[in-house]
Length: 116
Image 1 (tube, helix red, strand yellow):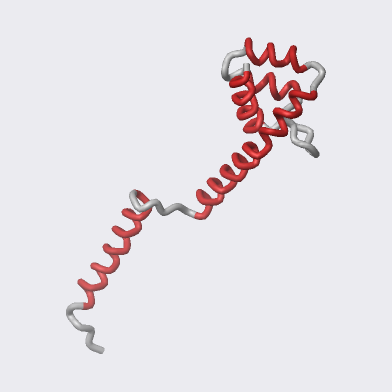
Image 2 (cartoon, helix red, strand yellow):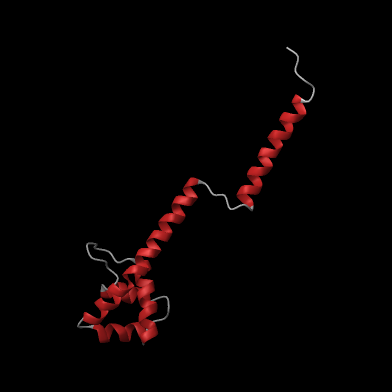
């Protein structure tokens, strides 16, 4: 069987083109792998849930008998440690869970800080 002379350069060109396309696509084109996409989707979901639960956290803070003391602690705390105060108060613990949600605690402490 006779292979045309243009076959070898054509295959090299197709291979080099495919490699260049993959490099450009992943570097500048915004392509991501399935694992990276799943991680981004999980992060966005968690962030969305925390945003949706902020009113719940604010309402829980209003109905807490020790709210004035906790709000004073939130006001006195630095930006980073405010989340810990809200978590310790239990305001960032969604219904049906035993542990506080850190994203919810961060958003709730930011919202509470606006009212202080």
